[in-house]
Image (cartoon, rainbow, N blue to C red; front, side):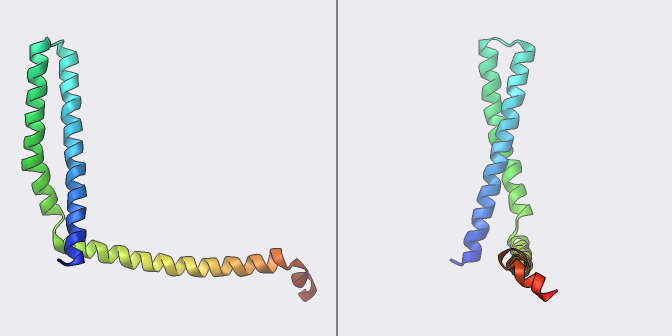
Length: 120
């Protein structure tokens, strides 16, 4: 099992869980709104929650998971990982050069301020 396969599987799993949570929260909020605004009785409230659970599971199975599978293909994830890796390398080089410059300026101006005055 390659590390790319594991990485892609973890990314897809996290995306699926986030989508499932979002769908479940949206359906639960709509059920609460319907129950409160329509002043449903106990039995109709139970039916609303039951219908909400079934709807949430159906949306998860038939909308969220296929969308994640389509949107996060191996090719797209590999390209995204390559882009993020390249960006991290660039930011690392910029950070190193900035840190070196700041460190030398700090040493010149703060640690040994007399040297700058003598040189002038």
